[in-house]
Length: 48
Image 1: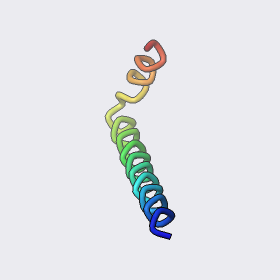
Image 2: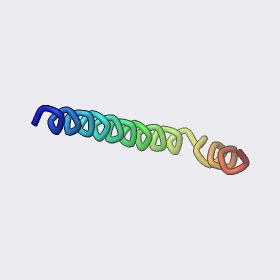
Image 3: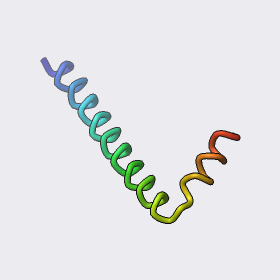
Image 4: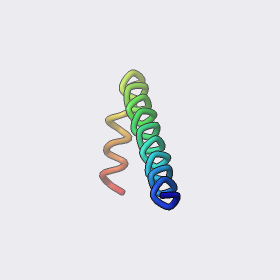
């Protein structure tokens, strides 16, 4: 029982982390779109 709950806790932490990461990424994209930098950055990323 304890092992299962530990694994589940770890999974929850990972999921929360991913959710926060995706949220902040979307915010960053919105901000970059607003600044007009997003397209340039996308080109840079595709080159890398």
